[in-house]
Amino acid sequence: MSRSRASRHLTPLLFAAVLASPLAWAEYPEKPITLIVPWAAGGGTDATARIIASSLEEQLGQTINVVNRTGGSGVVGHTAIANARPDGYTLGLATVEVAMMHWQGLTDLTYQDFTPIAQINFDSASLSVAEDSPFDNLEAFVTQVKDNPKGTYTASGTGLGGIWHVALNGFLMDQGIAAGKITWIPSQGSAPAMTELASGSIDVVASSLPEARSMIDAGELRSLGVMTPERLEGFPDVPTFEEQIGSDFTLGAWRGIVGPKGMSEDVVATLEDALKKAYDSDAYQSFMARQGYGVVWRDADGFEQLMAEDDQKFGKIMGEMGLTH
Image 1 (cartoon, rainbow, N blue to C red):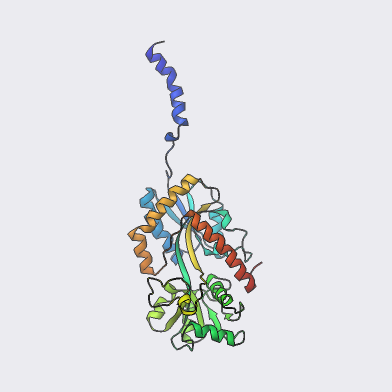
Image 2 (image 1 turned 90 degrees about the horizontal axis):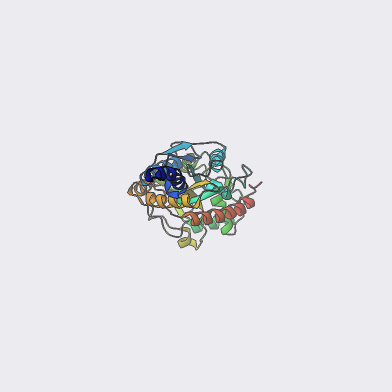
């Protein structure tokens, strides 16, 4: 057989071998990625999603399309993430509601329906009072709540069963006070609650510190403290609960990148590495600092552990609040 004829006969075999080789496949990602946000455009979660997506694009070399899927107190968007193909081309910015929704009977989804990739944000709960409030400090607040009958004081900051409602009652339980002793006035968020607080209509607001910043800076409100082990960099004058009364109870709102359950370990590793670089970028860090949002990094394993721990913590607190179904 001539050399040319041999080559012709070997070519199909070589072609098949090349196709079978891993080197023949394009490395992930080879096309644009969709990032689902379960909350409306213009809010803090949406803003965080868009800045991390922009930084992540530079690391992956692919377009990342941010899509808002709202409704059902986060159920619609989180369901869309969980139901996507686990190929790495549909991701989501999951929020702390993953640890809450199923306890309320809103959905069957739990953290186990997602592939955790990385946590990129955490905003701890804080308590704010009006500037002329009789609560001079956190200790005085706890003492007065203990010494007075149920319903003496009112609080707000979000809807019934929202993150800040749960945070307040978790802290009360930590101090040996029954959940629900402070009457919760539902609101459409921290902004209207802060207005009510400043006017004297309610006694305390539970929220993140960034949400209270403008009215604290204006001298209308003051913070009793924040639920963190150490003072926040953006709020160095606000003491922690621990340094005031020795309480190590912490709870807050987190955000992190997830995918549907069943994603490839190699794809997760690629995304985790790229996300760490995006998280460390000047663009992301400076944006979060300007907004006053907390920056906390946990890799895939650490993020999964946080979600598991919070799932149990929220279940216990919400059960005591009578909010579980």
